[in-house]
Image 1: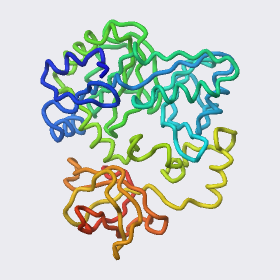
Image 2: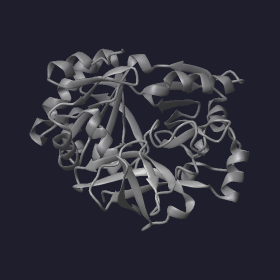
Image 3: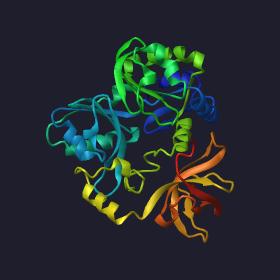
Image 4: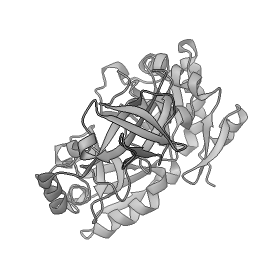
Length: 359
């Protein structure tokens, strides 16, 4: 089990630690609902240093990214971030990721912790034109400071004007007295905020400074449990749950990051799928009857026929109702469709809604 540079600190302040993607991670501190509310109303700090970071550099860096990713990275400019995915050769997804353009010939890819090795091997396989690739995951710490008070809580630590940063952009500068820190505004909670990338050696110092600066704003540490409920309220996909090696980006509603103005891995087959239409779609749903949908529960129609499966589900702390996402046959994917979740052999009524659940 790997530790992040801050694992010892989480344990010290009373976090419940669990194994996640090969790392020892904090799942909760004070409780998932309280932490969820902190992020929705004030500001919270997630240690997400388990995520992977690759640097791709050289004349052919963009060409390699264009070949392996579904979105059009040619649209990026210095300081811009893009959400994308790595399609495999059989119609599924190797991973979803963020692409940061550091300069014309240098990019940073941020990948999921559970896929670091898989993604590295996948991209390396297509690196036939000498792109310099560095895996900096083990030496890079990443904190996500999320919530409506995030900019106010952090502003005293940097000269970068945080409030004016546009969504999906980043800047490099001094933060908490540490130089060359990358600050981005992407977020996985729908509550606004920033991600801060820096060398492991500064982890404890930066963590402490953030909590000092954020104290007047009620800043608190937040675990992976609340990260999951927050992202689910926004209808954001989680790799391994809602998307994986068997789900197509078009089935998953990721057509908006699948651009056919260029050739990429399996693009011809995906384009054909777009023309013919998909057989199943990832939808959001709200429970009408009592019951909490869980990963891999069956979704059935009124007669009990199998029509799909739940990929993510929870009791939404913000909405006080059970919500979920799952794949259903096309004819049940329309907003307002009545579906049933099979919970302990009972048919529990739900209806298809359009995410985000929390607005």
